[in-house]
Length: 305
Image 1 (cartoon, rainbow, N blue to C red):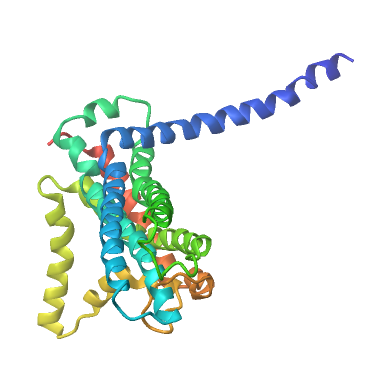
Image 2 (tube, helix red, strand yellow):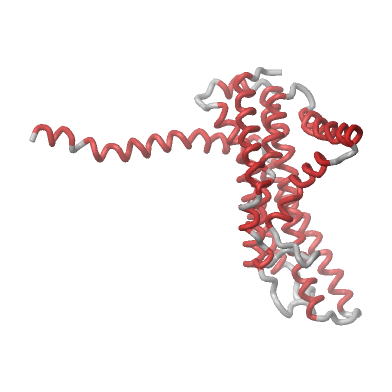
């Protein structure tokens, strides 16, 4: 009986211990991400500003179109459908592009700015590892900005649906846009672009952790110089094609672009299997992991500029 009484109480204590360990491992990452949001207001302001510009442009466009519809010829069903869907697709595209640009500029400055303003001395005194810090910064363009862009696009499209006053959309309200289908396609597009651009973000973070001056120049100049040298010496442009493929290749790997042109709003235009089996995706993720590991190592050795 003594042996049983000593062993039995140990079993229920294992689960709280494991949960506490998991919580303590994720808490620094969570608060590091919160810190990035507090210190970089542009992460949330820029997509919202893009949404405001889109709404203003859509309102002006709707008013102008309404005045023309009263005197212009009637549109056939295909033209009406394109006129209805295109503004919603363009709105989401503009917000997504804004998020991509903000993510790129954020990564260039993320690890450089803390060395420039000497705040790295304070942050290194906290019990947060360099790898956790780098992962928190990488999660901004890979996770946080896509989610903000999706929420801003969703709210913008809902506002566009109800914004025009009565009569502004006369002749174009024969059907409503397939919003739920468009939202799924938009979330899919944000996800695949975040994964596809992961090595680009990793490269920018690596340069940000290494450069002592003008990190944007150091991030752009080596690839440009390599492409120019290849062109001059070998009369080829393989490296330039590789860069273009990495920047815009997600569209060809993750979507069925036939027929050419038009907005991507249909589930039938998605090709997740082709994207997940693309060698470019997995090679890019390997490079992204290597860049982030190198950035964490450089930060460990980093000193104020």
